[in-house]
Image (cartoon, rainbow, N blue to C red; front, side):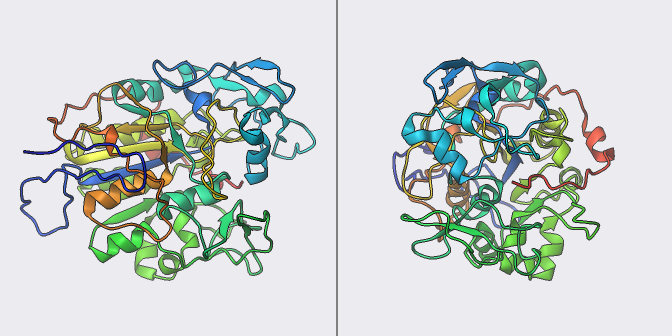
Length: 439
């Protein structure tokens, strides 16, 4: 008899993954029908910004500003007005305002407009017609409406959290915010520093060079011979070339020529090639080109929903559908208003909510999951699924996303996602060569 995965309120999820029939090859297999986890990472959106008004979800169509005035969320295009909103840890503190969630209007606008406040622009939701693939996926599969950033900061640490579960460099200090120069990681120019945070001080500067030795899920996967890849776009760092990868900041990967060449895969459209060729790894991260990232600001496009739909459709139409879980999420709140106060666990977070959609033939159908998750919850599911054990920086608060699934159910057939742009569009799209995010 196979047991259904159960939620747990603290620490380890406690969920036992069901056993499956013995496999016919010698590759490492999981203890469940899920043999592949694909983590699709988009950029800079709060939950309310994409899913305000979604049926049964914890959302709001209005919020308070710092004067206590109620501001109705305005409908905007996905690209918006080519305005970016500052969203480092200090911005989180101001937006959060001791739990009142009313400081979003005081944020500064980025992209060279740092003397302007965001005002009502921070209080918005995206026109649903422009993000129809996201709503379609959320209605058909699982929408997690309490997925919080692990840390209360921006893209650099967010992407680290998605491979390591946290950025603690010692018992009392963690990396926060951004390195002082690009690219972010072991390829940063000499003299590049980071910012640290502790329970008693922020910012602690200068922090160490951004080439870290803390453990990541890569260590656990490698130890068991479980395949992984990080699909990432190319970047033109002042014509010197490069890629945009969280593993650039992990010394063990960056200095391993074999893994850096083979496991960190660029261009990111290689994910389509690998799916078609039967080479999808057990665990994959997929990072978009800047233009397809949903990042607000100059140069971004409305192609993000189609990019995500193309990945889902590629898996869904392939041999991998019946053995795959796709987790789609946005790396930080981007300065946009959200109505749910995050739980304050310690100086590391939690940060604000971001949208998260779980797609799988075993995902609960049309289900809004209210379980409190964080980025490490995705890694916790991977750990439990392959029996890897916890990461050194994994937080006890990170419960597995297992409640999103019913792994005892018969896998349901795939229904293609309708989108404006096809996979062929992205396969032939010229790279922007821009960093996916630089703040």
